[in-house]
Length: 246
Image 1 (spheres, rainbow, N blue to C red):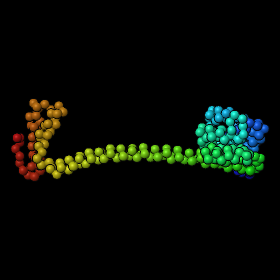
Image 2: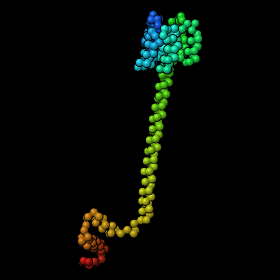
Image 3: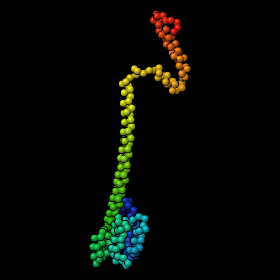
Image 4: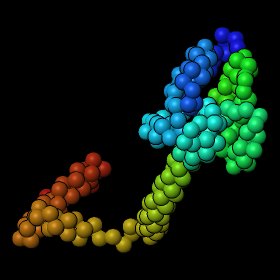
């Protein structure tokens, strides 16, 4: 594998691979291959111990490499149970040709994505692991995009509800303004010919306690005097004579 491929793998996702094999030397050998491509790993010597690790891990493993023939629990059984706990993890079964029935059964159950035959070629195995990690990245990216689409749809729905609510509020306000405009138009059309300005002024002064009833006569007298003086001035300018007082 080229250095460019290894760097791209490391940048895209922080992978950790679980190796399960009762032979520690085999497990460590697989671990060294993973180190070559910059991928972290955890080694477990049995299926039971590996299940406990899977359950307690804070983050799902990207890929599991499990041997088939192990004491206590076969690799196919372990991978079947691991699938229920971490379905997005890519699962590889390492086995010999004599275990073809177990491989067929595991494939039919969907417990494994592929099997690796013993003895393996290191170069081919690395490429196979690389393909599995890229497949896991696609799965996780699909989950991310689905969640993003779901969140966006939720936001769009809330925005739509808010817009409809605002539209209803604006519609009510517009109707109120239309009613006010209609009323003003009616008043303008009716005009002000029949209005009694004196009574309106009197009422306004009374409502605001600006003038008592006893002072109204004085107000009228003052107004009449002012009007008389203005008429007198106009008459004088135009050559007419007005009496000295009213």
